[in-house]
Length: 536
Image (cartoon, rainbow, N blue to C red; front, side, top):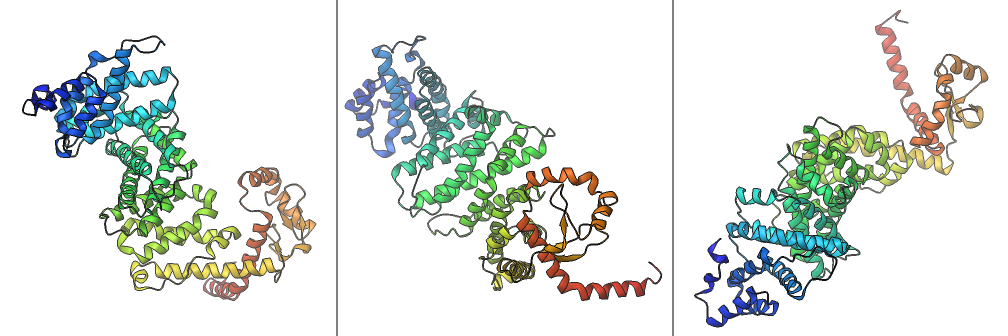
């Protein structure tokens, strides 16, 4: 046992202090509180001998029935709860002291947890998890703890399940929070969230083992969806905290985003490392995708890009922003998730690119490459969707600043904004009735353009249009529509990618682009024929 935990460590203290400490060691909460008041802030370690005796496992009640605890056992229980609340206030504590305290703390936690479970008191059980997590962080895992001490804590069976329960519990205090006028309770919850993430992020390099992930999932009722929901909500809470006028709250929000994005990068790396497509990291990542994590990450990027607080050290700001964008690149580069969320996401990408162009020093080379790919490939395709165009309409187009030019994004940005303006011109004309709804014959051997009234619609799929019965017959027999007509209806109902209104807009865009480019097309055809005479 470490000497600071022995009653003999108080022998040089005044006699009244020694007497109070001995009574407190016997389980007197009043004397424990008196001892707290009698010691100066830098001498709170004098409480340790009394707390160590209070936590002695010999005081653990042996009560397997549903009957109330005997009076003595009830007093011991209350003293332990008070001791657990006081431990985080005692600092600094040598990590070897924490190793001696931890077995007793954990034994009492298991008893108190089982007591809450038998009483079906989920709120008290979650609160107890929060207590043990605070104790673990302040007592067993203080700054500078050795690898051996951390391993001692990690190897405790069920510890990460308690971490997850505390993680889930603390969000109940954030309903309807106004970060412009934060209250003490919000600040305390933010501190607890930071502690939780310190333990979660501490395992971010342990890709080979998913045991702690299993424990986290177990702590939220065995549901990867619940764990993903907690993580997404946490990103939102931390992002909102950045706007707080209180330095401590804003700093805590920034630190938590650093932890969260590091953990997301860990999940992404672990998902790649494991061959099985149904690995636990993969399942969590999939639930994050379903849970709209992208929207939360975009909010975080914009809040971080605008974050300025001279009282807070933000040396890691570029790292956190780039970690957010790295996860976004993983989510969107395959195109599937983007197709499902383009209306919301396309304007967010545009704002992110604008931010990147104005502050190029914040973004890594790979981030620039990713945003260039988005600007050149995904976003131009989205201009064929009227809802996306309307979302983009209000984003500032004037980015001709020296910073933007230095980022290398300005030429691409200018070209894209020009495309958006052209598409908006067509959309406004279509919606105002200045141009008529156009159709094109879906017989690819024909392709005639004209007004809607000049075409007949296929009665089966209600989606293909033909300028004549002959063209419909040709497309049915030779064009493949015979085999796809019935499949086209469920395809449209599932994807809902192009409504009738959207298809009208696409046809108008094609007609507009063709009118602009036809002379260039004719010129290129003539040049090709001259270069390859007799080529058919």
